[in-house]
Image: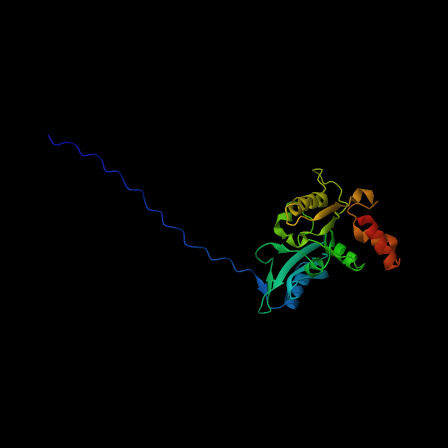
Length: 231
C-alpha cells in the first residue's frame, strides 16, 4: 500500500510593507496679516504678538499670539514664517527655541519667568529674561531647547499658581521639571529658586503684579527691587 504523504505546511502569506506615508502639509496663510485677520475673526481680539528671533540672523523664527476672546480666558496661537513669506501654523520641527537668545548669549545672568508678559516686564527694567513658548504647562518642559542657559546663572521664578483640583500648582511643577533638565546641561548652570510664596503675590501673581504694585516708581528703584528678589 502506498505510504500516506505528509500534509504540506501552508506557507505564511507574505505581508506587504505599508506604503510610506507622506508627511501632512501644515496649514499655512499667505501672509502674517492674513493669519491675524483670520484669528481676529474666528478666535477673538489679539492682545499682543510676540516674535522670537534667531540670535545669528535676527530673523523671526516663531510667532506667538495672545488672544482675549470675549467668551473666555486668554488663549494662544503659534506660527512661523517660511522663506516664501507664507505663515505656517504651529511650531517648527524639533525642539522649541527659547525667547531672547541673543541677550542670553551676551549675559551671565538670566531670569527665567513664566510667560511672555513677564519676560517683557523684566526687559523693560533692563533685566535679561526668557521664557518658553509653551508657557508653564506641566509636562511640556521637554519640548524646549534649554541649551542656551548652559553655564549661566539662572534665577527661576514660577508664577504663584494656586493648587488645582488635584492639588497641583501648575507653574511650580513646570519650573521644577525645567530645573531637572537644566541640571543635565554642560556646563551646568548655577540655579536659584525664587519662591513665589515669599513675595505676597495674589493667586497666579508674577513679576507683572510687582510692577503694578510699585506703580509709576522710577525704573531704577523698581529694577533694584526685582534684583533684590533675585539676590
